[in-house]
Length: 163
Image 1 (cartoon, rainbow, N blue to C red):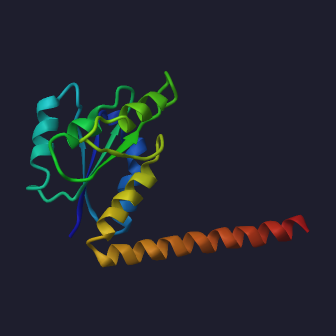
Image 2 (cartoon, rainbow, N blue to C red):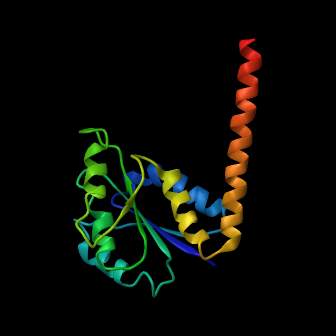
């Protein structure tokens, strides 16, 4: 069974990561959710990252705000794909978080979704897993077909409403 880690820098980020956890669980993926801070618990961050493969993880999602170094710190000690999930902040509306995550130095890539984009972080993790797991890839194709049908139905309803 596939396994994804969802790490947040603070428990206050839970609302942002819940959509990622939800979509992963909906697809039957095992999820472990943790609070690990790049700045306040750096030893735990390093230990988690260095042992992630041994512990069965295949993708790691890191949610963080402001300086948002969590994804980069985790990516520095693993070869697993790391997805950065920027958290909206009061100061800059999440732009600070986004830029902190997306501007990783050469050699330490962190894929990045939009600010508060928990669902997309989960879906990106599923697309990565879908390369290895055909059943996840099939479920993603079905998911996209359902989205298409909903949009097409919304368009038909709108056209009827406007006539």
